[in-house]
Amino acid sequence: MPDQPEDDTLSIQIANQVINVANSRTQDGVDAKEVAQGLRHAAANFSAFAEFHRLDEGAEPDLA
Image (cartoon, rainbow, N blue to C red; front, side):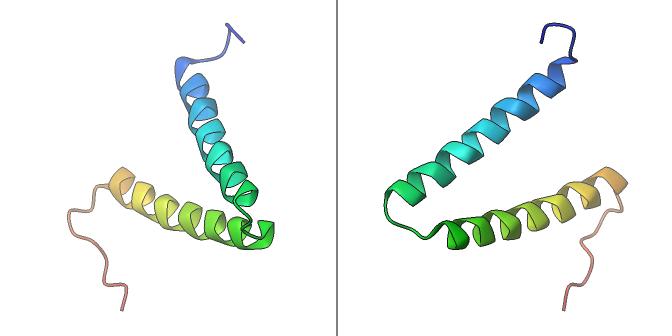
């Protein structure tokens, strides 16, 4: 897709890397539901991290 912005290409590459890790884990015998749960957990954590840095509030919120 040459008409797509470059960051879309990078995001697709990152997504493919994550999918490759997930596929590798299932090939190693890990249950796909466990892999999916791990991916959801990682996505939620990283989304919160990215949003925090996007807002640039200076200090991490108290998560306790």
